[in-house]
Length: 131
Image 1 (tube, one colour):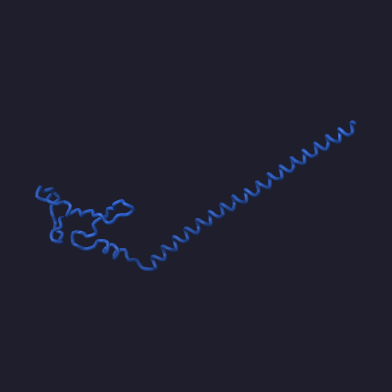
Image 2 (cartoon, rainbow, N blue to C red):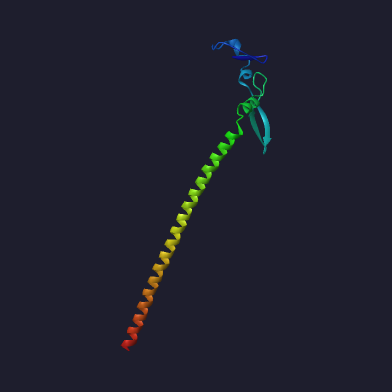
């Protein structure tokens, strides 16, 4: 197909040497859309061969009902809340495990200290008795 005077016309699939005159017209073109932070950004030419704005057509085709949008939003919200709740439960479980480990460590250290005090006091008692 080729575009001539805003009309699309059928052509054969065979490449004809006279058909190569300007392939850019059929393929569309790139244009510099803007500059951002000193770099040139390239965007697609928005006008198709019929002279219509293809982005407007796409937006019109994408029009969905507010109900569908709300349904998608609620799905995203539920999925995210579920993820966050699960993550919080895992964090709380790890925090509780950490607290339990801390208490077990403190208890073990206290028991060792008590054993040391007992040994030291027993040794002092034995030394005093032997004098």
